[in-house]
Image 1 (cartoon, rainbow, N blue to C red):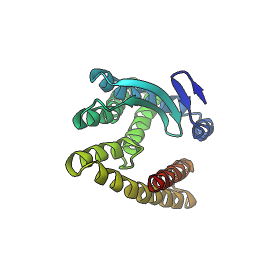
Image 2 (image 1 turned 45 degrees about the vertical axis):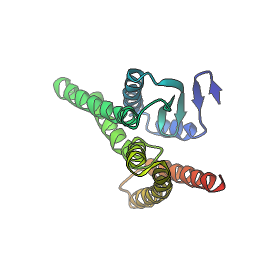
Image 3 (image 1 turned 60 degrees about the horizontal axis):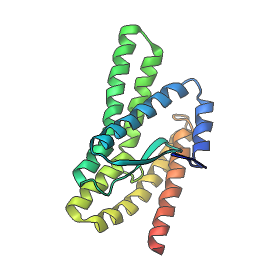
Length: 198
């Protein structure tokens, strides 16, 4: 589905279902995700990158932009700015929670920290993976970076799915992470298949 500069992916239905089930923290998650993307946007505008559209997918919000005119360093800064803003929001929300005894602020801080940790996983569809890809492309070349990403994406996504599923089965985790990691694994396998075909 596409509405001008907004693209809604099928995976967003899973996100909506998760937010509905955990409606008590949905607002805090949306605030954390929005602030995260704001970090990316600030860096993109600073480097005059052309923002093409906003995508809503299983991971939340994602800004798609033309990065062909950016250097490796600028691309890393644009990618790292999202997690950096997540940490800033977490610190500000935690301080607010302490000063105002606000549970809402504490939960927002927790959601922002969780978003930071998840996004820093070295999977190419996440910020951590994009940063790693840019570093490898600069030091080892784009072909090596893309080949490494294809392999590591599948290994890490499969490992995350197995671990989170096991934790869910023993009652130490809810089903959110297994669902997200399953979709990630499917997308990584699809990406690898398309790469082999091309």
